[in-house]
Image (tube, rainbow, N blue to C red; front, top):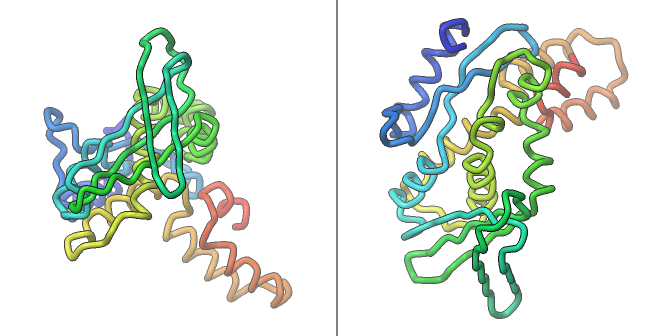
Length: 230
């Protein structure tokens, strides 16, 4: 699938790997070149996606956390979470089921404070359904995607992307933010789509009110929504 992909996207993806300071070494498993379907150009492309381990490395290297870990909770596990003035998370696996019910991450800050984040399987699946690569996989436009081959890792990476918003920002946080941005491109409109919409808005005869609405909403468009807008 990578051999059939657009060559420009391959080169850009490798540049992205270098920019965030990760590696494609398969032993380290810090990131991957992932096939995607460009719904605007109707071609196969490649995107760089940091792995769960890659995000953990970037976060610890940045100094924002001293450690961060994530686990899946299965049906039958003892799992208790309490929030408020005192936060507690207890997970005792039973290893008796294959059905995931929750995914959680815990970040340990340099001062020792633990920051937990919990997501239900419904929340994880909702995000998976917004993935353009997963949509392309279901539509048989690509033969596989990481959501189908590595659901557990994608689920853990998803909850880390959410906890990322609450972590303290350091001077070396830029690489983490850039890696998160590359990862989230599978769920949002491409810069090319947004530029094309801007060009079309300059030529359109629709009302100014509608144009303003599109301009505001465009920032949260998925690739599919952007394609429909175009």
